Length: 100
Image (cartoon, rainbow, N blue to C red):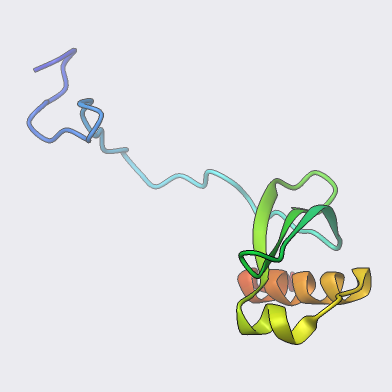
């Protein structure tokens, strides 16, 4: 026993997993109605375009793989609008719509 906890079932960090008395809601619904491309990286050698995107005005940033391989070849010299459309499609695919 460590501090009153059973240490037989430990996590990879060596600390015990402690069961809660009930389930907790850690984060409520977070919604976003916009996104912003913070950076786009076009790598012709790797045939990839990646975009660093912020979803929502206070949302977290994340990298999206926009085009690679055949889709990179197919898009050719892409425009900002094509990038925005492709990123929007990826975001919509990742997050469900919010209908309160």
